[in-house]
Length: 405
Image (cartoon, rainbow, N blue to C red; front, side, top):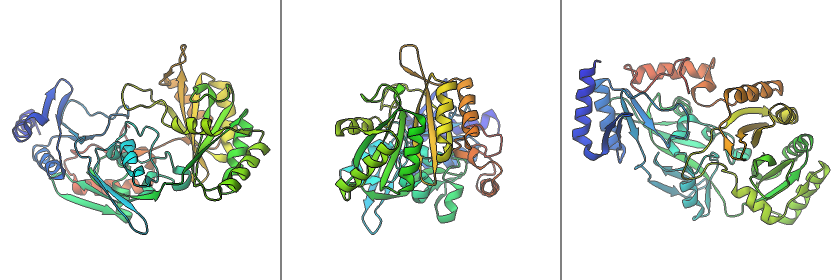
């Protein structure tokens, strides 16, 4: 398609969407308000060969498309409804932020099973397009493990609901196989969540505590860690804080057993106020407004956690580290560069290379999400075949191995 076809497509979109069509130096943005309007945009884009890119909350670096084509702003699509049952579910649109949705659900005694640590800013559609680990992954694993169905709009405007094995072609495909316009997610009861926090002075003590707690199968929903140089809380000045939530059953017995395990690893339980402060800082440094740094990320197995943390302390001491313990025995680590004034900054390339190298030495590697997670995996071939079938003009972006994320 040439420039003339693009201009004809832009003119048609502007006529159809009026003030919700915007064109400036950064490109063209259209803001549909419902699934039907997304279908209209997809049909026009397909007919004129316009590249089409859904936009989430913009929290992923490098996710923006070039000025050529159309960006779909899905901010208006924020509907959701909860259905009770043996397993409660929520049906929702892509424009909600995860923390906004969680706040609504908490009012009904429900909670998302898992949400990401940038929940105050990240959108539902954006994380479904990427997949990943986050808050709640200790009990529930990856986001994709908690999705019942996803509705997408295909190039040309047709709607399609993916469920079961077909979800592998949508969740984590970064929007290359359909524009995510809705999803049904499994929920959990949330009324009994109780936070806790413990201080451990050394990487060996922290790693031993994580290993022992995981082995004893405590009923945690979330288990996280933070190196105290991030200054997330008013806790100890050095060492680490291990924090999370448990379900609250047999409250006294559970807390006593937790305290014994922490003490056996050379740590100490922190008080209730500190536990709530630690839990409240789980999103740090992301806030609903303003800029925030992008962390370097890696994943290590629980047995390699001590080595990874020890090397990070000695080789890149200027990095502050947070971690999320996930089901299956892995720990996702995020690191921020601590600036001269104590503020957090985005790590540079050398920091990221060190993070990846250290993770590999500890038996892990890069924390891969989106299309990069499936390099050399049979799932990629199935995804490519599906994309060629539904998007022969490749207007939704490339799923090839050279795709950058």
